[in-house]
Figure 1 (tube, rainbow, N blue to C red):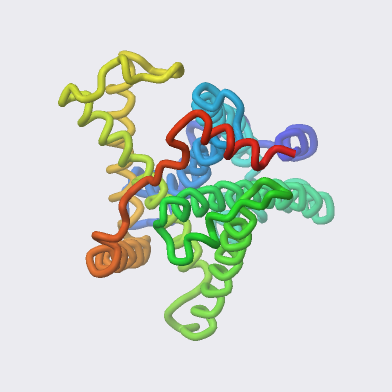
Figure 2: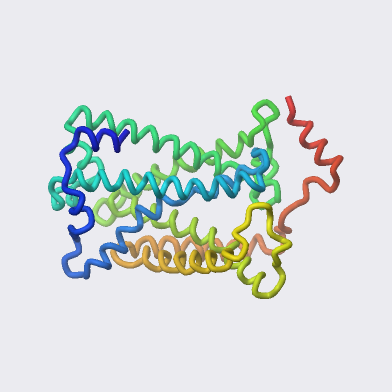
Length: 320
């Protein structure tokens, strides 16, 4: 909708402007530093593709479908995302005014498409973001369910409960939705309590940065372990599943690990140092919690079916 509206109705800069014009709000820093800092929002949109892995227990032919879901979500998002960003960028009339707006994207759409029509298009974007949020709640609820099933959360029996009517972890869905609602409430509360030190425009990028860094570090852990296992000879081609990168696996994983290390450092540099402090404090608190309370209690994944008969019994319990 955004691409078609901008392509057909909005005045546009020449295509060459997209690749030749440079602009930075950081006057005392080189352009490349501003460019790297601008990757934060783009990198944030590339999170969440792991949802295919979190819903594999509800997916047919999961060993093939889930990897394809991850791969295609990144490929399709990259292709169409570039097209959309290209048209949005070409619709900018005044770079300085757009950069100085409270929300540059909203400003660009409204000044390119006009007041009421621009707002109508933005409502379509809002609806799309709502579906993204719904997907996040779905994915998070499955992670809560899986971790609780392995006795890794307080009140695990509650969060691991699956509704026989809906065949979903309803308690996990409510917990994920409640936490998602409380987070912006916390941000608004902090802004109200410390109006001279904190603003929404400071805290929102910090939350975005923490989400991005945390998710990508979680992606990097299995990649690092696989590279280590291959180097040690523990993982061989016989351990590969039906969907595999084969000989490309190690090079792709190494490039991914280097990229994760780069963005982890990049996204805590000024002016995003608040992200680093909050993320570092959270890691320290979790490490302390693990040492004091969790270590020795959490036994790891709990087998749910030790035989084919038990597996069929579990599946039959939720068949309508």
